[in-house]
Image (cartoon, rainbow, N blue to C red):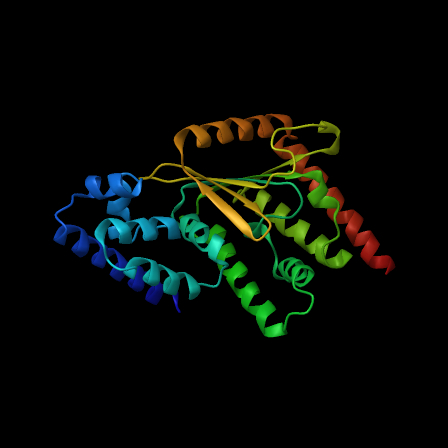
Length: 277
């Protein structure tokens, strides 16, 4: 399903939610209280600005006694997106974010990946998959990277552990190209990237991938990911704690200039390796 058609489908979801809510005689605030979100969130669902998660769609069905229609609509729309179920909502939020901050302990973040690097990551996770499946995953990943090329792109800040620069994903030439891509984005001032060096030792959120997103008209969120699972958190107290941890990571990491030099040095190491193989 094309992006325009998918957005139109979410607009139908929102219009139907508004109609059913008004038929039930509930305000957005009243429905929000019953499904444990704010009235503002209900309004954003109705306008297709934000997409609810599955448990929220289920609670809406319960509150409005709609016999599962919103969960069924949600499943159909999520299924038609080129992302895993637990990540689809995050991909939608990336497009709305005004600021995205990531910490990557072991792999280049998806928004910074080249096609060759991304393909190597997907093949490592799906060694027996057909080429068509890998290419479908790759199209979804590359579609997300377009976000940083847009004139209205969000402010993007990433902290990469030095491990990310040293693990050879794909062959050495792929790694050199990937790291060159990151440094090019840095030099073009499209992204801010810092490296957390091995020498930093123990640090906040060790080994824990995280993505913080801020929005113009909605509360900030935090996304964390595990094995075939992801959690999108928007409790203000939790988000505040994660933001504090991220600030500590930035303070511990190398400066932007030193990080650029280290990434360029790692790229050159991979280039020399590629020339000997």
